[in-house]
Length: 313
Image 1 (cartoon, rainbow, N blue to C red):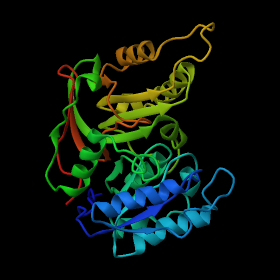
Image 2: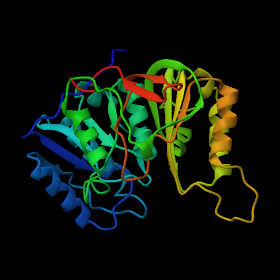
Image 3: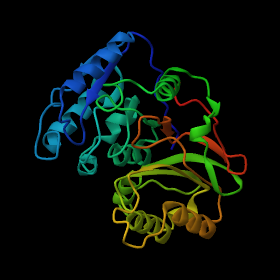
C-alpha cells in the first residue's frame, strides 16, 4: 500500500478539534488552545461533542466517533488536533471508517492514548499522522519553544527536516550502538501493547520503534517490553527509540527494583540493534513531533536521529 501524506497546513486553513479519548477537566483550556491557533492565523472548528462526558470518556463511543468522521468528511478541514489523551481511542478502532480517512488524508495530531488510533490508521490507511502536542495540553499554556518550532515545521513545510538537533539537556544516550533506517512506528507503550495481536496492529518489520510512558513503575515497564519481545516485535524492528518515562521510578524506596536504565540496557543487549534513550518526547512540555510512518535513520553511535523525507506534501 502506498504511503499517504497529508497536505501541508497554511495560514488561513481550517483546523478541527476533537476529543476521541477522555474529557478535559478544565474546559477553559479548550478556549485558550483555540485562541492560540487563531492568533497564528488559522480558522478553528470545535467538534460538536468535544465537551461531553461519559465517566472517563469524552462522550459515548458514537459521539466521539462522529466528531472524528465529521472532521475527515469536511472538505474545508485541513488538520485535526486532539484535545487530550487519557483513555478511549482503543474502543473506537472497530468502528472507524478507514476508507473515509484514506480517501481524505489530513493531518492528525495527538499523543498518549491517541497512539492506538494513529497506529490503526497507519495499518489500515498508510497515512502519516503526528505524535505531537495537543490543544488542551500544550497549546493552552505557554508553549515550549522547541516543541512549538518543531511542530509547526513538521506540519507546514514540504521539506524534510533532516538530522534533528538537541540541546545539552536533551542529548540522547546510546544503549546499543549501530546504524539503521526504517519507518517510525510507536507512541505510548501501554497503547502499543493494547493493540498487539489485534487487526489494528501494524507490521513492525523494518520499523524504528519509538516508545514513551508515564506513571508506570519499572516492573510494569519491564513487563510491557517483555511482551514486545515475546510477540517478536523487538526482533522485527530495525532500531529502538525511548523517550521520556515520566514519573516511572519505583514509588516505594524500601522495595527492591531495577532502574529504567538497567531495564533498557538489558533489552538493548538482548535485541542487539541501535537503541537510543532519553529523547525529548512523551508526557512533558518539551517534546519533538514524530511523524508516525515517516522514513528515518538512526545512528546510535553518533546519538543522532534524522527524518529522511517530509511528512506533508
